[in-house]
Length: 397
Ligand code: FES
Ligand SMILES: [Fe+2]
Image (cartoon, rainbow, N blue to C red; front, side, top):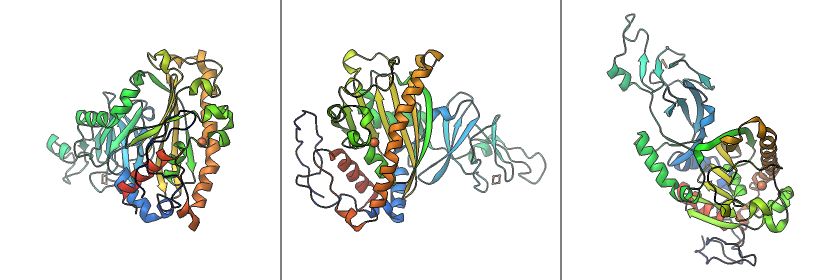
């Protein structure tokens, strides 16, 4: 890998992050092509990247009422997202404490207990074992508090922010306060940058799933590729506005960019403006921010809407995206129905345009020439930093 290169200033005056790319290009890919196609590399990333540290696991709106239970998979591990009676989201390993069967593989709503279908052990919404019929062979053998605790579902460190559920499969401490402190520390520079936004006001308007025929890293890299906008998404507006973006690296695991004038310079997505997401100062109302919270939360924020793509890598060449759009809760009524639809459709249309590109980026990784691709210093330092982080975390060499 080449050494860090001083930040350059393009003619437009936009900021380019300091990164590993040199000019002229090195002639070699930073990540080998097999990192996008190989089973071994995929497994290493699942274990070392998705299985350790905070990762996006789902949306809070999937759990609409107490007793809602939603199975997900993170790092190949089955998990259960659960809303308890105090409206708190808890996350458990989706494995019965008796013989390890998954408790459910479909989203469901239970009354008070999650029951295993095999021998009918049941667990409270707090995870504690509360009944195990014929446990001691005798009818009516009760599960006391001690046994209930000992055989409770295994909890996972979790934290909810901006309607997004994050988990850390490697965290030893699953206490909610410890999780909140650790997550807040991890996101601190982004929370500071977005302190004018009130994320408690978010209202989810629409969600769509995209089954993408590409490695998860290509999904992230495409999200961080600001260069392709005028070519693949010409509807976003004039070329000059589409390329008027500053690179931003808030910390090594939060990288992206900001269109300082994006909301006015690029094309409008809706005829009517939506209410701001909080007390947004006038000078920040035009800004569009785009960040990858490493590895799998892709966030796009304007002053009046928030878009998220969270994804699950299913295979080296397959990624399942869950894309959701949020507005302020005061925009939830009938008065804004048309505007909400217009916004969501415009954003989903952009994502649709990327799907064939992603498929072909993946197809190209099977060429021996894919080890000789060239990220360019003027556009791709953020992508290079992302690839460096993947290589460091997953030991790709
Ligand atoms: S495996 Fe769940 S009750 Fe036996
Ligand atoms: Fe795109």
